[in-house]
Length: 64
Image 1: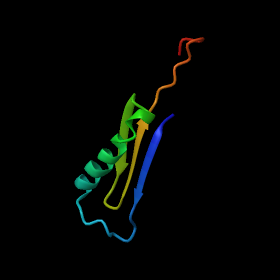
Image 2: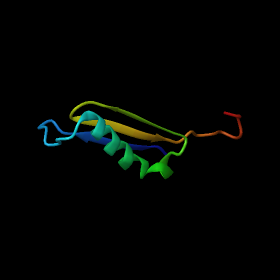
Image 3: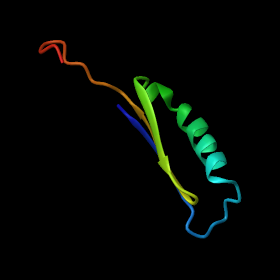
Image 4: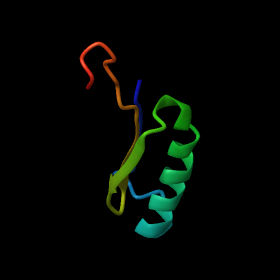
């Protein structure tokens, strides 16, 4: 099962830079590494961020 983390701050209460926000969200997302150890990703801006941990599902009976 994959893990998803979202951050949304339309009022601008978070005072860090977009780079600091990316680092913080990525660090928080890494805590759910067991939800999907196959890959991770991040998309975001100044007041929002979306991170995920991906679990690749393998189908042994069909070789996928």
